[in-house]
Each structure stands twice: as structure tokens, then as C-alpha cells.
Amino acid sequence: MPVRIVEDPVEDPSWSALLDRHPAASVFHSPGWLSALRQTYGYEPFVVTTSPGPTLENGVVVCRVRGWTSRRLVSLPFSDHCDPLVDGSDDLSEILALLAGEARTASWRSVELRPRAVAGQAFEVAARACGLKPGGEYCLHRVDLRAEATEIFRRFHPSSTQRAVRRAEREGVTYEAGTSSRLLTSFYGLLRLTRRRHGLPPQPLAWFRNLVTCLGDRVLIHVASRDGQPIASILTLSFKNTLSYKYGGSDASLHRLGGMPFLFWRVIQDAQARGFVELDLGRSDVDQPGLVAFKEHLGATRSMLTYYRYPERQVDARRSDWMSRAAHGVLAHLPDATLDLAGRLLYKHLG
Image 1: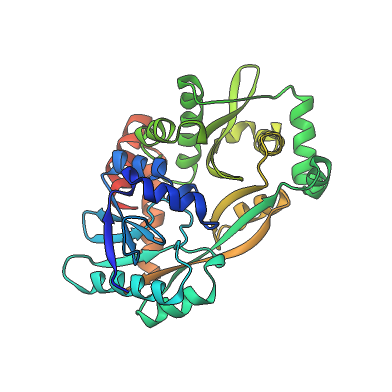
Image 2: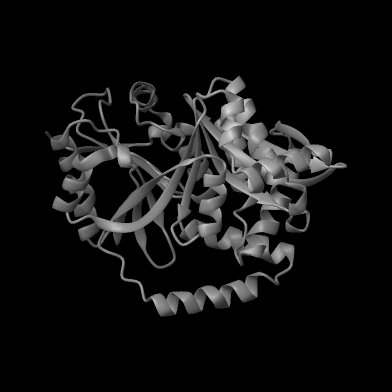
């Protein structure tokens, strides 16, 4: 079957129709997410398909990422996962072969794909046959929302999560959700605090503004406050029957109030009321035991994410660790405006 490239899936109604039909489609495939990537970072989305006519029957969505040091094909940048929407193994092999071939030319340095485990053994076989190798392993956590709310709360860790929620309720912590400029400002301030703690710049504010504009009612900002002061905030995305946690931030000096566990509990309750059946808590690095534990204390089930890449990434671990420590020391002490500027300059090249 001939393989072809379809440019600009954002404006292609056939792409949206495929997302409506395919069970593996997620918010990261959506035109709104792709549009926000393009508007913020200049990435160019396209779809590789074996569909012969104008109607897309399958496809792998990819972005062209032009960074300072390399030109890469990524499916997809800043996305926790992005499954190939391809059911036939022969079709999948043809599509992956084209992408790997692009990375073997002078035009593109590498290609990276981020399938979930549901992509199955067929993906692994096709990927390896094309020279794509595992290039990163992460934890993915999900909460089943089909149980009664009382049962979900019972699955929370008794001391670190249940007790924190009760503490927040006793302390008068309040919950608010929406997409107003005020809530976005509160969210971004807390995100910056959290990124600074980890020695990282925040993502550009324009990215979050574009998410709100491009995704509309599929994005929601949740804020926990005490006496009018925001103490924790998260941003969620929705698609079909899944709610996805994507970004979060908190004031560490007020963690004792239990703002973040309280916030997730309220988000879960709200998600059930809106008919969602799953809360996707996103990916975590395997060497982030604290984050992994936090998600599992919410009663989440863990699975593994394996990214595939061609060619294999060669990493000097000692050099990488040294650079990470040096960056942490510098970024943690930058003024807010300078830290924000670093994010605006850097993230386009990191996707």
C-alpha cells in the first residue's frame, strides 16, 4: 500500500473524523492540541497514512521540530503519549519505514514515537524491523473513575492522601475551576514556583494561553486557595471519556495544608459528575520515586510507557548529571522575569 503524507491535520475534517472513530485517539491527537503546538513553538504537524483516498482510514501524526542543534520528527512534542491510529500491521510497518527512512536522510536527524502499551506487540515488531529502538521508559498512571466516589477515596493512601484531604477541608481550603485570566495567573505563579524548586524554567505563558484558546472547553484550570491565597493548581485536558492531568504547581511553604491532594479529590469528584470514566495522571520518570508514589497514593494503576527512537540516543550519563546540577544551581536563583525568559527561549528546542 503506498504511503503518503497529509499536511496540516488541524484543518483536515477527515483527521477529526478518524479521531472520533478510533478508540486509541487521545487529546494529544486533537486539532486543538496540534494548533497550540504550532502557534506557540512553530512546530509543523502532518499525518503519515496508507489511506488511498481523501478519507483518512489510519495515520500517525508527527511534528517537524527544528531546534538549535538538530531537526527532528516527533510524535508528538510535549505529549505524554501518542498512539499510532493504525490497525493493520502491514500498514503500520509501511508508515514506520517511511519515518525511519526520513531520519536516515540529511533532512532529519532523528524520529521519535511515543506509543502506549495498547499499541501492542505489533508496534514493537514493526518498530524494530525499521531500526526504531526503545529510547526512554516512563511510568504512566491512570485512575478508574467507574467506581463509586467513596470507593475511590477508600483507595487513597490513608495517611499521606486521605488525611491531607481532611486537613484541607478543616483548614477551609476552597476549590475553583475555569479558564479566566485570573485563574491562569494563579496557576502560572504556582507553576513557576514548582519549576524553580526543580531548577527548571516554566513553560511559556503563551503556551497555556494558546491551550485555552485552541482547546476551548476541553481545558480547565483548577485552583485550591486558603483565605483567598492560591496554594495549589493543576491544568486538565479532556477528550471523549478521559480527563488528563497535564500540569500542576504548588506553594511548598503551604504543603502542610494538603492543597494538592484536596485538589485531586475535587477534580475526581467533578470528573465523575461530568461522566468521565478515566483520569490519566500522565507520565513520570522512573527515577522520580516521589512523584510515582504520589500518583499511586491516589489509587492509580501503573503501566509502562516505552518511547521508540531512530537512531538510538547516545547519552553520557556523567556529563548529563553534571549539566543538570549546574543548571539547577543557576536557574533556582534567577529572578522571575529572567526565569520566564529562559523558558520562552528554550522550550521550542526541547520538544
